Length: 142
Image (cartoon, rainbow, N blue to C red; front, side, top):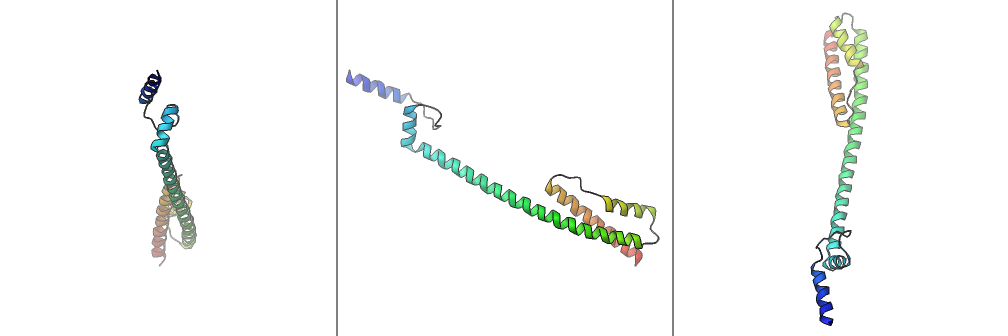
């Protein structure tokens, strides 16, 4: 009879699922996972995933800060270029209507993008257009 209890216990232990999820299984599974190191391995994997996510987050924050600084610098440069263009427009005497309309469009244009990367690209394109138009006005005046 004593051996029968031992055999029944071993049979039950053999029927235990081999899951490493602490929420699954029962007492025997928990003991097995503790002894095998499965829980420790799962914890280590989760900690590594958290560390990697933290590193990605830090890299994204740095990228966002870099984009914000570039946007600010480009906006400042654009403001200066627009001021110069405005001065050139006011000094020009014989601008045709098409050129005057181009100048006014460049002076009032605003980037429509909401993402930082796209906004920076739009600002840089607008800055290039402003500088090119300023160079054209300088050539007309010179």
